[in-house]
Image (tube, rainbow, N blue to C red):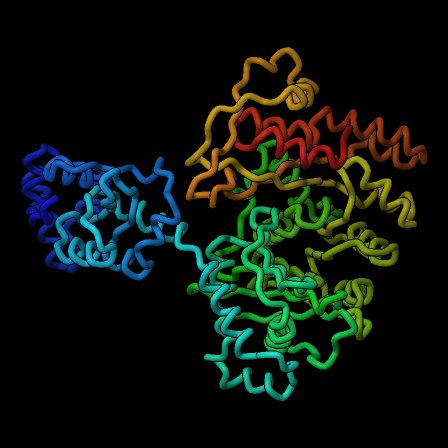
Length: 569
């Protein structure tokens, strides 16, 4: 097709009835004052949408308009255009036509320089399609993965190391002047890719014939790259230097942390090393520090759960326990609760291992078992600091639990976590730890159990027919209403990295320690207690909450079954 022609955007939108003369005059004045592009002024002022502008340009130029929200990209085709060029010229290769030419999406189809440069880079004539700029930039962000760059840097590091073992002295210089060293560039790129993909954890695992790097995204591990195992010691050594660990100790596990800037974000990294057969396995938890603390209103709890939690938090004393396995979102819930309780007229003290987020206004204590600074020792001292609210990171033993419960019985609001399968079994677990029965009955006010399920990607959600096994599982909660609901599943698209899921949400149940439940605790019969507790919960279990999300189209039957089968038959 011939090169694009310049178009007066304001006149075009007026001609197509999308803009008035008065709006154009107003926008031109704003453009003169701010220097912004005229199209951006139109959009920011609410005169027209980006999609309306793109469609108007497509009609005028008689080319195709492509809605990238529903577009499934071909990653190999997209890679034909370098990422730097795609960002600079706001261009993306969408399709290869039957005659060998490429269809290229441009946010500004009148940009002659972009047309010429993209044609030169692709070494082919192109067919222009008009796309929305914000959609295009989002797709560029998702599609240009750095897997090949990471593999290339790993090979560069392998060549740099050669066949010689890594010496400590060779690596010590990296702390100050080795920013250009291959290992530094490799780790920086890996961290940037992890943050781009919203990874919560990074696993660096030496195997017999490779070094495997995996990211945990929405609770599921994905292989990012595999490299030569010779670089494993160099990578582990660099990470130890960054976190202040003992680089000479390879026989024992070590834990540490460090902070770094990644993609304009401050990231707190918790690191754990473990000696394995083929070298040191390193796992890092990534905690973005500038994303803002989540409030209880944004945790997406069902209203009945939120009411019960706020009721317990409003009391001047007592204990609130959040239970669930590792990675079930307990910390997020507790920090959201602390965020709501944090005020200038209350003193809040935490005992944590580790301190995951730093909250202004709180007194946060890092437990250090190696020097005897245990939860129980910190807690004894905390109670002499005149606190109103105390957070105990975890009830790990009988002594810690008893001190926490005494505090809850003597005028303090105590928040903590416990590893149990569900809300009803939590008081029994405390009794098994050796906590006196009267303490459990008098101090615990609310037990909140939770899990996390993956959320279906909104961009590729489509109707889904459950399997016979899934129907059988759903029938337990839905009964005769089973056939009246529709079900969804993600097809997989560029927005969710072809996984069909994007993000996670919570599944909850709670047990309030009513008079009947307290009497059952004092009764001493676990069977009677479980019966009374389940009557108190009135069927509002984790499983039922998961089914609600399935019926609402938020998650899949498969995902709900996966988490609920952990605790129910």
